[in-house]
Image (cartoon, rainbow, N blue to C red; front, side, top):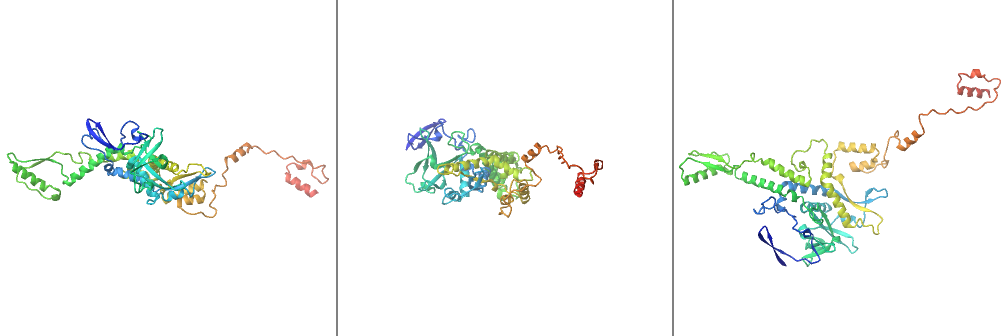
Length: 474
């Protein structure tokens, strides 16, 4: 252990650090300075006043807690499934003895839903998610453990190799029961999913970095309100009495006034013999626009997490009769990138994308249909439109919208009989359907029989009648 002394803003700050191997350095230090993973100074001058935006305190603000839990729980309730690419390029649900077990049960103490929630929560709160792989003798991943970000440190070797320094964790796989306090593992044994990387490619930045000041302000407003109402909801002020009062009389008057107006004596009647006047000094909640300020801080937090404010109870929802467009907006601007990064990181971490000794292409996919629940009327209309347009077979629509099984004859899409393909219409147009048909040539019947009609008699007679006459004559 080595003690290093830094001079920060003119003050001596002693830090004790453990020396690393000369071959490796922290990823956070490679850009030449401290990485602001935690917002230490929420506003200018706060450091000198010993005011900081601590992560644990910021999470206590209702808007931050609501955004993190909303996103994590929404993603956690989606079905994570293994899919396979067919010969037609369509991804369908599949099962594989190498990948399916770990997707059903990622480790010994978590379900897949809680595993996904912890993954997303770590990413939203810390900006980084570190997942340790546990392999069997074949090298197949059989368990995944989401690590505490405070116990993981990315390292970069001079040749560009990436490693991770892990501190002992008795709950997580190979770190359980480890004799040494730290272990350095290569990047192939860690799944590292980051938020946006503003300072270093290996260090994600949490949204708390941007909304820490708003969350701190919101907590200050709530603490001030709690203190205000605990003291009887009375602003501080000045009590003025008649001139010539002694100090003892002023102290007694002050004690009597505070006793009558305290919270436990609210509603009681105060009686004074002297002419007493109370002048308010501090602003009340209305003058300070307390509600407006608190709403602004919550909206700022929502904007950093890209969550529509109405989804956490801040303001009314948009005046839409159908909730589906609102959920689609929430999906596209908030959780779609989190889902995509999760799937790609998991695919690479499990080795699903490795084509060696495998002719089948697998992948992981969240079923976003679990996010959007439609009412019965909307589901019925969507199913009818899908079947009527030929986009789905009845069996597919029954399974997607109602969770029902197949029926006889429901495996094939249906279309109306009068509908034609573009190819058939093109062939019809090429044949000029509006052209008049060419009349067929009439064969010569030879010399007329004695009882045949003459040419003059044939005028105005149809071909059918002529053939009938010829037949009778024969």
